[in-house]
Image 1 (cartoon, rainbow, N blue to C red):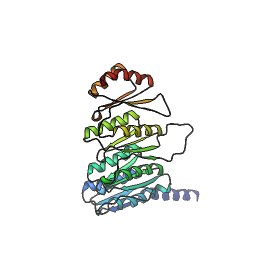
Image 2 (cartoon, one colour):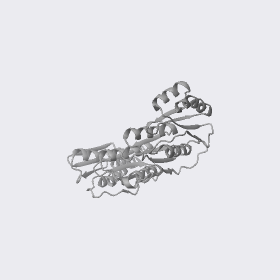
Image 3 (cartoon, helix red, strand yellow):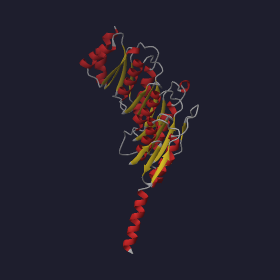
Image 4 (cartoon, rainbow, N blue to C red):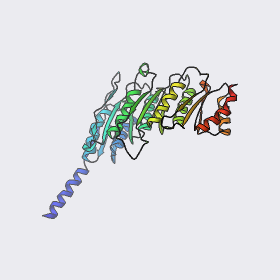
Length: 326
């Protein structure tokens, strides 16, 4: 009797793990469209066996995997609506786990494949969510992570997936509700979106975004060209510095005096904006050779050098740069 029960349990377990289901494509017409649906389902669900045959998709896996595939498939194979709507689905709890959720973000305002890809990449680059997958036909972004992480992804989505006239010109910040950790003081639990409205060409935009990113030393960032915005993730002091830099550098015209910023947390950590009438690259090279401060960046549009270092380093940099103002 003991052997029979054990054998029956093994057979029952095998039946559970060998379950399969066939899904019929109705609105995904091309092989590429079907492939995108299949890849998003397989990668997000971590499903080992998934094949496409004609206009059918066969999924083999656990009951939880099949339940997930049945939930996501109709969303990615859905008919297109016009106009598209900006929506996020309710969470799917993978295998009933409230800390392992899938959320689909339906994009409304990405008018091109490039704009859609930029939004997808901005989310992936700044949230570090392992599962972020896109479906071009339906303009859908599939995310799987902890609720706190998919909330971060949705915040970026909500800020950037807007009509151009609604994007605004002021920074927007979001603090991830991460419980304090006594053992760490560097939690990068702040997200920021800085719309750069005054650069008039791609070179200026990239140069300013790079200067902001390098000066503040944010660990995660992405420049969304269609939205003309810098998306960053870092700690509170980095966001404070970015806000100050943004306020002074995202301007239509240059300023005629030098300005400095001192970190409230570390007074000997200084950022110095130096206006010059000479070529900024020449000044930057000279500065790196003669004083070697912690960081030097340039923004040609405003004829500005951005220097970060200690008080002694900034003083030395000023001694090198002051003659260029005469």
